[in-house]
Length: 316
Ligand SMILES: [Mn+2]
Image (cartoon, rainbow, N blue to C red):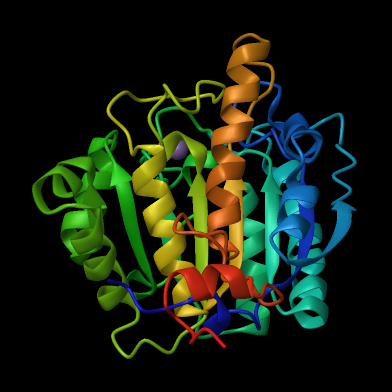
């Protein structure tokens, strides 16, 4: 039995929430409404209910420029760059005041800003990228020119992927060439999620001491759980596997930053959107101490009659 208890993991429960309403990193509108959809789904209330001290900092102001011509094949370069700098500033401020930051997006280009802001505060941070896609295209390897597929250009030993199942040939080449720690759904099926998470953590943080940045694209999960997302790929992680990842990472006490990317309320009907938001929030709460075996209560005394009936104390 796992002896680690909630009482051991209380100190990181103070956190700030930053909304990153970006959609210019890909071609579909809608991810700019992701932060509000997650708030409307009860994000802050759920975290408060499990004992978190949450402060919502509101949304980063993206203030789009009307004219933003492509740079070579890269779309919306100025909007994404400007928004990323503002995101980095907000994330940095949040991490310096609350110590932990939950960034709710937004398409996955949000991570350009969140990683930048996080690295200013913790230069030794490592990244776990949980996604169906590798997102390490560069303008040279990208067919689409969508920046949400290009935010990852950090040092190769600082990042590991989990959940991959749709990797572009150029990305595969980069992964092979640099021997990057990319764990696909094939690896998850082959080894189980427990082993894969351990391998990913050992790869980026062998000493078990570094601040962790989790960048979670909801399309890492199977589309049956998160249908309202722009680039769904079948055969993804189950809610159970994601909950396991989240609970284990929570127990490390080192998750300083969590991104939630690619919730798109414009995709699917109301039921799809509700399901996407609920599956996502189920996972988010596990990152902050909501454990499936139950929370460890701090102010509950088992009634004497029950103790006596079970011979746990002597009758007097
Ligand atoms: Mn993705």
